[in-house]
Length: 205
Image 1 (cartoon, rainbow, N blue to C red):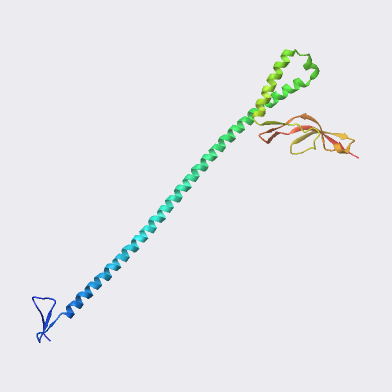
Image 2: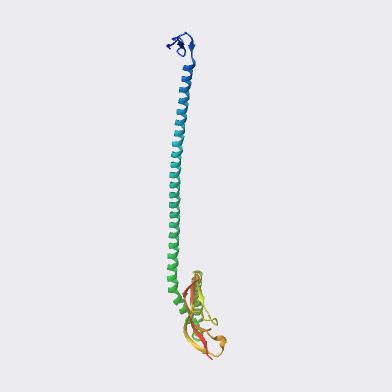
């Protein structure tokens, strides 16, 4: 069968008998348009897929950077805290050494004033001056956290007392009781700085 196109209407096809048929050309055009739509949709889906993958990658990098920044910030804060604690420990240690050196001075004052007979014979004005200095020194040490440990008439405690000697007692209630304090003990900021040296009662049947 011979077919030819009509020059006036390229979409029309003239068949041998002279009739015109436009159905075949229109179907071909529609198929082409449909194929283009499918390709365009597939391209769009591929583009969206790539964008989603890229977004996931960016989110992962963002999370990684955020986590690293938070870790670095925490490390910095912890380092500052450790530095502050080290400074406090240094000051505390320095104060402890200073106070340990001043305690014997305090005890020298107490020893001098403890001899009542000799102390009463000393000039009153001089005694008042010495007592005032002693009071000042004691207050400074107490304000720095020094506390005396005087365990008279208390049960002997190995953790805070040091037994200088044991004395026999007839009363069973005085067994392992501190009879006398030879040397005061001290706490510094709640921590035992020096145990009290004591005489302990010992009951034997």
